[in-house]
Amino acid sequence: MAQFKELVFSGVQPTGNLHLGNYLGAIKRFVAMQESYDCIYCVVDMHAITVPQNPADLTRQIREVTAAFLAAGIDPKRHIVFNQSQVPQHAELAWVFNCVARLGWLNRMTQFKDKAGKDRENASVGLYAYPNLMAADILLYRATHVPVGEDQKQHLELTRDIAQKFNNDWAESIAAHGYGDAFFPLTEPMIHGPATRVMSLRDGSKKMSKSDPSDYSRINLTDDADAIAQKIRKAKTDPEPLPSEVEGLKARPEAENLVAIYAALMDVAPEEVLREHGGAQFSGFKAALVDVAVTKLAPVASEMRRLMADPGHIDAVLADGSARARALASVTMDAVKDIVGFLRSR
Image (tube, rainbow, N blue to C red; front, side, top):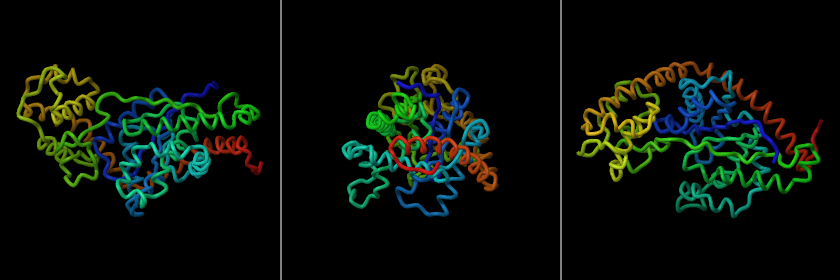
């Protein structure tokens, strides 16, 4: 198999109200990755319109995700930060992949079934073909690694299937154009550690979500210190003290969630949290969690608000990143056109 330069592609949808789950499950990880890999950070705004969006809200949300990247510590000069719609090759490659992927593969995608619900006939074709565009996002840069949560593992498997089929279907042309035995890598998942799924502060059985009607169910990345503290103090718990062992968190979803949040914010294992706080009542543990959360999150929120007050700066970061992304994407797309047999101007 051909050798590929290690490169990480990461994407976040601009769907508004970024919260603690987005930060711990994705953005915080992205910041750490940039120390070890060449990284491409994408605001995947084309994915956002698979469901209806208010145009003014979408523009603001693209900037908000970018602000979160920057406020959390991603360096747009060392790495590439851009929004997907400024690089037209994403859509071009997605069409090629629409012709590579099989209907049977897409029919197995559980996320479409979940999002479309019972009224699938009225779901957009874009929502159905979303995984092919996700594959294009990744493979347009021939990325070798992608950080994925549980809900995206199936899509990454599809990306690998598409890459393999493309490599097989055009093997002779790939070799003839000097790319060896494979043009696209079989991208590997980067599996996250604890707290990849941050749960609601009001119901530990449900994922933290911007769509929850209660603002007390989540900590928004733009919340100030007072709001963070109030939401943690009001978080649902049970009457028992914290256990001393992780095994004791089973069947206690709210307790497990708060311990996981503490662990992820502090970059320690839940076992270490329980060694320190096992036997404590929740009133004391929540006070400790407030201190940690405010220390870690309040500076991010403050910097996000500062950046959002200067949209011109955010737009300039995205323009620069998009130009650099297009330079890479055009090389891949030109090669794909040659391999497939499209005639193009030289």
